[in-house]
Image 1 (cartoon, rainbow, N blue to C red):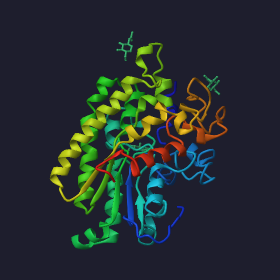
Image 2 (image 1 turned 30 degrees about the vertical axis):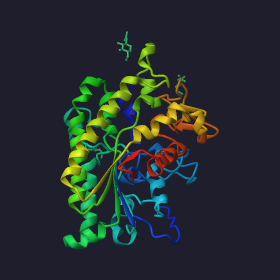
Image 3 (image 1 turned 180 degrees about the vertical axis):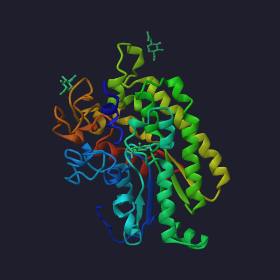
Image 4 (image 1 turned 90 degrees about the vertical axis):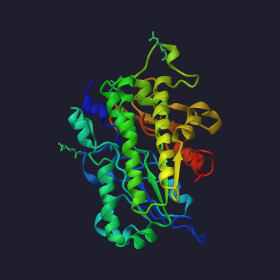
Length: 364
Ligand SMILES: *[C@@H]1O[C@H](CO)[C@@H](O)[C@H](O)[C@H]1NC(C)=O
Ligand SMILES: *[C@@H]1O[C@H](CO)[C@@H](O)[C@H](O)[C@H]1NC(C)=O
Ligand SMILES: *[C@@H]1O[C@H](CO)[C@@H](O)[C@H](O)[C@H]1NC(C)=O
C-alpha cells in the first residue's frame, strides 16, 4: 500500500450573530487539527486539490465545501453557536485583516497538524506523510502575531482576552496516527505520550501567560472505534474487541494519553490558580456513539457514511470523495463520516455532552 496515499486522510465564515443576551464569551481562540479546522488547511495550499475542498464534504449544513473535515458543523461550530458567536474564521483566510475580521476570535487549527513540530517527524524519516507542517508552535506564532496587532500593554491584553474562551485542541491525535500507520506499536507509542502531553501543556501555559483566563484542553477520542483503525488493525482475534466492536488496545492507548494529560492539567491548575483550566473529555462524550448508537438515532456507530467499501466502509484506495466511494443516503444516521472524521450529528452529540452534559471538568 502506498504510504503517502494512506496518510492523506489525516487531515483532515459564516456569520450567525445571535440576539440579545450578552454572552459569557465575546471571543473564541481555537488551536488544533482536523477536528477543529474550519478552513486553514484549504487556505494553506499545502495540498494540491484536497478532497476536503470538494463535495460531499460540507454537503449537510453549509451545502458547499468549507475545508471542514465533515459533512457539516464541527464541535467548535456548536461551541460558537452556544455562546452566540459567529463561526470562527480560519486564520489563514483573514491574516491580512485581523483587526476587522477577528473581532470574535480566530481559528488557528489546521487539519493534519501535530502537537510536536513537523521537524520531529522529518527527523524520524516519516515527515513526507504529514499533510501540514503547521503544528502547534506555528499556530502559537500566528496567535502571537494576532496579539501584537490587538493589544500592547499587559493591562490592555488582559482586558482584550478577559472574556475569551481558548480551546487547545484536540491536538496530538495525529502525532499518534502518523506513528501507528507507519507501523509503530502501542509500546513504542507510549514513549511518545509524555512528549505530546508536555507540548500541549506548554502551549496552554503560553496562552495563559498571554492573558487567557478560561482554557479548555480536550483529550483524545476512542481511536479503537474509528473506522480507519478498525480496518487497518482488523484481526480474527475476538478478544481484541470490546462489546461495542471497538479495538480495546487502541482505546486503552487513548485513555493512557488522557490520564497523563489530566495529571499534567492538575499541576497546571496549582500554578495558575486564578485561571479556569477545563479538561474536555472527548473520549467519554464520544463513547456513546458506539456504545448506544440506536439510542442516539444512529443506524451504525462504527461504519463510515462515505467510503469505498469494506467491513467499515473505509477503503484506502477509494476514500470519501474519490472515485469508487459513495455517500450514505442519510449522514444523520451515522457517527463516522469518512472513516477518520465524524459526522455533524456525532459532533453535535459530543458538543452537547461538553456544553450541557458532564464531559467537562470543571464544568464549562
Ligand atoms: C514541510 O516541511 C518540509 C521540510 O521543510 C518540506 O519539504 C515540505 O514541503 C513541507 N510540507 C508542507 C505541506 O508544507
Ligand atoms: C488477542 O487479543 C487479546 C486482547 O488484545 C490479547 O491479550 C491476546 O494476546 C491476543 N491473542 C492472540 C493470539 O494474538
Ligand atoms: C476498494 O476500492 C477499490 C477501488 O475502487 C476496489 O477495487 C476494491 O474492491 C474495494 N475494496 C473493497 C473491500 O470494497
